[in-house]
Amino acid sequence: MPLLAFETSCDETSAAVVHNGRVLSNPVSSQIRLHIEYGGVVPELAAREHLRNLLPIAREALRLAGITVEAIEAVAATRGPGLPGALMAGLKAAQATAYALRRPFFGIHHHEAHLYSSWIRGNPPVADFGRFQPNVSLIVSGGHTMLVHVQGLMRHVVLGSTVDDAAGECFDKAGKLMGLPYPAGPRIDELAANGDPGAFDFPRPMLKESSDDFSFSGLKTSIRYRLRDNPALVSSEQGLRDLCASIQRAIVDVLVGKTLKAARRLNVRCVTASGGVTCNRELRARLGEACAREGMELRVAEPSLCTDNAAMIGVLAEQKWHAASVPGMLDADIRPSWPLAGC
Ligand code: KG4
Ligand code: ZN
Image (tube, rainbow, N blue to C red; front, side, top):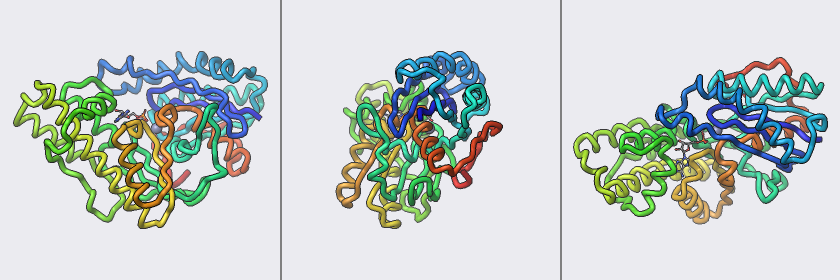
């Protein structure tokens, strides 16, 4: 019973066909080039671009899956959180498709979908829930940083989230201060590989606190002051590499430290991670080392599923559909600020 899913919460337009946990197609069209000159995502441009991309990407998803639209048995889309205009474009396109086909529609919470993206594995990718176990899940991207205790499939408790900037936003804003193009995370990752992470001592905000919340705005301010006092740092190639390595080390220390602390406290044997920042090589490596030391299983989403994609929306929608835990929602509206706790 194939399901067609859409994701348009921010600056990626994606459609996917999922069938019994198997991802038959998952094309993603990124808008990064469109927003690069503005140094961040421009909501109105994102919404207009989604409208342009939705039909071609849905056709591409069906073509890659080798099925016609009439074979689709259910439709899903991201309902929130996200940019209102961007969400509206995908949700309404999906609901119109479901209405025309007379199929059920499921509105999915974007962060809840991230929680299960690390269980999608292989080629072709398949949702591997047979080996599911309770876990602490780190979701870390340009828009969100949160820790969640996933107690069972579709049973979760939010432990903490960022009180100000997300970790990806911190990478991007630090990059902007250093004159790197948006989004700076991947470039900082590259430059850090040949830098000295001990060259500059940046703060590790909230690392020692008992709360599971995060804060990255103080780190950003500290980088700003460091560059104000010594602007020549970024004009030497090695200075830039050392800065990147030191900034990355501070962010990764906080992410790894707080994730492992929560996992130990809750006595879980598994940690999962997803979201764009989990493409970061140091974060992946350090999470791997820390989990190995604790004898915990680590599941990090595959890079193509770390960033926003419709496959994760489709896989979760299928679970909800089969569990009948969510009725069809043909008239559901977008929820741009939907708390994960209430979904
Ligand atoms: O999940 P995503 O594609 O979009 C949302 O924000 O929802 O994440 C994008 C974020 C950006 O902040 C980008 O700089 C960051 O993920 N990012 C990275 C890396 N690749 C992407 N940050 C650090 N290292 C990377 N390799
Ligand atoms: Zn996301």
